[in-house]
Length: 329
Length: 259
Image (cartoon, rainbow over all chains, first blue to last red; front, side, top):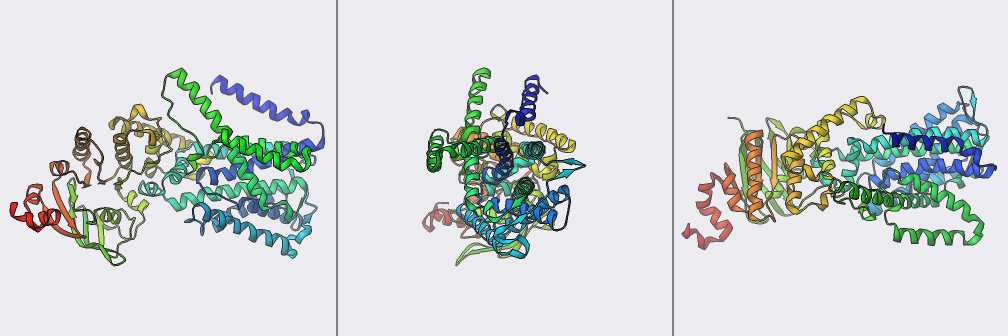
């Protein structure tokens, strides 16, 4: 490992470790935890939207399924956190295959509508299947997690659990995207016909990527359920899917770090703009419009562009990589 | 000698139009077969049938004795048939290097989960893949442009990259759909040399659709002429040029007497 890289990692680790001590009040700690949960969600949406090119509105429903699965298993069957967390992931994988298979051939707006339909169906189930989901009042009394005797009762303890899970998920996602096998996902988005002529099993690649992202979403849902100790249908509105897509677009779709930048900026902006009361959404919306006009490929795209320019000056190589929202076409 | 590719009674309809009608072609190992015909003769349809993009209505295609009918395109690619496209189909937003790496995945065994975990097996496999890809890029004189996005290459190099990518799958048979379209004479001569070289040094059987007769007649061992989906002539390039049926299909009845 290079020295600069080592220092960078050390710095990130230090910041992550002391962050909860910098924030004194309970509310800010809760917000920071929500940043991490949204970060996992954004990673999962970026795999589908950024890399396979599918505009998804269904991931909040999968997040809900993960939350409900985990909640039901730990309250009704008394499973420990680790078991219900893993089974939530399994539920996410099943949903990925069940939803992914019929929507394989759908592209663009049709895929968006299909996933939106899936969200609506799940919303109805959460709300009306009272025997299982508890209907509008939801499920209460979800125990806080304990792993090998360590209790994660308070929000700052839960923070460390979230950091570990997020880092593990980020590493899996980064390995995949950087691997040669992962490049086949982007190739499929760029030209599916050429990809299949090159021996890539397009349906299998697409379902694998989709299933991986639904697993991540369901795991995020499980973490959410155990943090707030209460799940109810109103926690999973369709609007949340739009917020997630906003994170990706703002952070940079199809960029490794895009979802991380996006989730931090959007969650924090959403919270700190609450002070503006009814003007909150207006300011937020205008802000996003302005950002998209000047930063069409998001924050990650801007950083990439600056880095390329620096490298081009230093090494004298031609500046050849264009980045932009066009990449999504 | 047994043919490497045997096309038997192949037929394909599109609605009321017969695009390929009861076609029989034998292609032997290491042969360069030129496919010509007027526009709409069914040449590209034939390629799409061989590579599995269209299911055939009737007939069979055998590669070294095994039937390819009903296989999906990626299976046929794995069986050893690679192709290029009439209108270039690269992965435009990916780099030149990544384009070839993706094509090389047919030869790799590491799966999705291994890639996520970054197992030592995957790391080793990626290293050998990279070496191989570099070798391929050098062969095609693209090694200096490995970090360019494919869409930013000049036209001739895009064509070359497409052949490089097809070659990365280590095919037994290579289908080239108008490889010199849009090239100037010097570029098409280079392209011809490249095709001959692939055929001679690597022993790859080549099927070639080409409108540039100088190119085609110069390098083909055998030529097949299609018209309205029917094979109207087959033979050595010199004979094809004098064949009255071919002249009729291209120029009309009146010109036959000038042959």
